[in-house]
Image 1 (cartoon, helix red, strand yellow):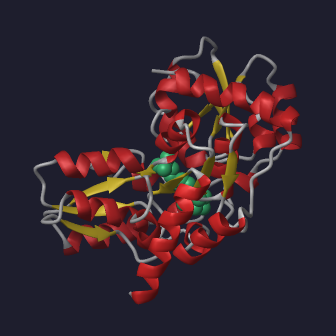
Image 2: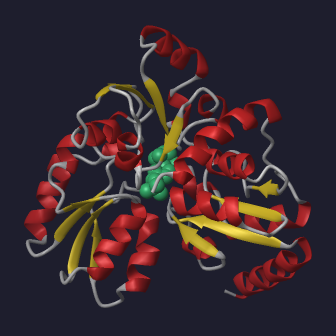
Length: 303
Ligand code: 13P
Ligand code: SF4
C-alpha cells in the first residue's frame, strides 16, 4: 500500500511534467484503472486518443491499441507500459493472407476488427470494434464483405446482416475458451442471474446470452438493468467498473479463466516507469499510418 501511494504520487507529478493523458482498457489491472484519466472499451479509447490535446498519450492496453492511438494522433508521443503486451488474435492475420483473399473477392469491401496490426489496417476499407460492428457493416453499399480476423464476432455480425461475409478464422484465446458447459453449470448454480456475454465468445455461447455486447455495452446494461445478479462472459478486468457502478449487485465471472494474460502484463510500476523514461514509444511508419488512418477515421464517422 505504501509503495502504491508513492507510485501514484510520482505518476501524478510525471503526468503534469509530460502533459500526459492515461487511457486504460477495462481489461487492465485495477491498480491501472484506478489512476486512468479514461477507462473504456476499444472504441471509446480510440475516440479519446483522436480528440485529446495532451502531448503524450499513455495507452494501457495491448499493442494494437497503442498503434491505433498513434495512427489517429500522429504528432503525439504514444507510450505503452510494456511492448510485450500483444494480442494473439491480432497476430492471426497478416497482409499476405489478406491480399490473397482480396484478389479472390475483388468486389468485396474489407472490414477489419480494430484488434489487428497497422499493416493490416492499411489494407482495409473500414475498421470496426465490437461496439459498432453491425452499424459499420450496414453503412457500406456493397453485397460482399471480407471480415478479419475474429470468426466469432464475424459469426455474430452475420446474423444481423444480409450481406455475404467471408470470415477469417481468427479468435481471441481468452473469450474462445468459454464453453456451453461452463455456462450451463453457472446458470444451475445461480438461477436468478442473467448471462451477459461478449461477441468474441463462441457462437453457441453467445446464443445463450440474455445480453450480448462489447465491454462498454455490458457495463451499461448491468448498471441499468433491474436484475441484481449477473454471470459475466467477458474478461475479468471489467469487474472493476461493474462493481463500482453497482456495488450492491453480484457479478459471477463465468469461469476463472476469463483473464487475458496479455492485458495483465502491464502494471502500475511499469506505467510510472514508461512516463519517467518516455519509453517504450509506439512507432508506425508514416506510409502505413497514412493508409491505416483512413480506415480508422471512416469508423469514427459511422453514427
Ligand atoms: P472491446 O473493448 O471493444 O469490447 O473489445 C474487447 C477486447 O477483446 C479488446 O481486446
Ligand atoms: Fe486480444 Fe482477447 Fe486479450 Fe482482447 S482479450 S487483447 S482480443 S487476447
